[in-house]
Length: 288
Image (tube, rainbow, N blue to C red; front, side):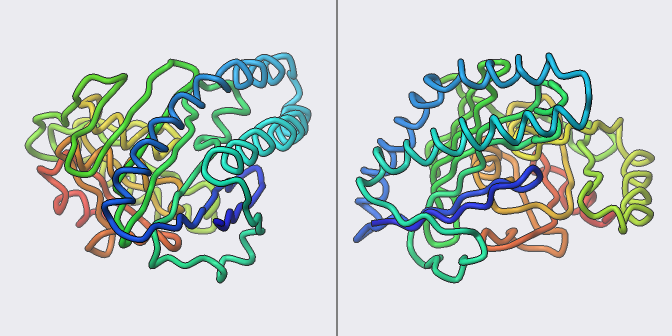
C-alpha cells in the first residue's frame, strides 16, 4: 500500500508516493526496475501529449486555452498517471489531496512526480515542458527521469551511476567562472509581489555573467546544465517535484544544486535554489 498525494491545479501539479521497502538493497534493486519501466510508460503517453498540444494549438483565445488545458489535463493526465501508479507500483493505493500531506512519512523512500513541469509553456505550445519523476531515500534523490515529449529527449540519473541523455553519458560544461556562464534566471511568476527584488537579482546576474536565459521549466533547466548547454541557474519558490529528478541528474553529471541560504535544498517543502556546473556556485549564490 502506498500513499499518493496530489494537487491538481494549473500552476502546481505534484505527487508524493510513499514506497514501502525494508532496506536499501530492496530500494535499489526493485525501484531501479520501476524507474526504468516508467521510461517505457512515457513512450506510451507521448501520443496523448501530442494530442493535447494539438488541441491547445487550435485555441487562439488565451482563456479558452486554459479551459482546454484544465479539461484535458484532468481527463487524460491525472487519470493515466493515477492508473499507471495503481497498476504498476501497487495494486491498491490511497489517493489523498495535498492538504493531507501530514499523512506522508518522509523518513521512508518515496516517489516525487511532476506530470507537467513548465505548465505555462505547455499552454502556449512553447516546447519546453517535461514529465519528471524521482525516487527519494533518506531525503536524497537516488533515481531520476526527466522526459521532454516534444523533443523526445530523455534525461536519466542514478546515484553513483552517472547521468544520461537518451542512454548516452552526459557531463557539465567547463565554464570556470560566472563571467563565462550562460545562466537560466527565474522570474518567480507566482511571487509577483517580490518582483522588484527578484529583477534586481536578475540584473546582478546579467551584469556578472556571459548572458542569461529564461526557460520557465526548472527540471529542464537543470538537465540542460547537466549536459553542458548552459552553466548555471537560480529560481525562487521551487517545489520538490520541480527539482528532485533534475537535481540528481545534474549532480551525477558533475554539477550541484544548493539552497540560496546554503546546504542542500529541502525535498519536503518549498525552496529557493542555485544550480551550477560546480565551478562557481558560491559566486552565483552571493548575488541572491
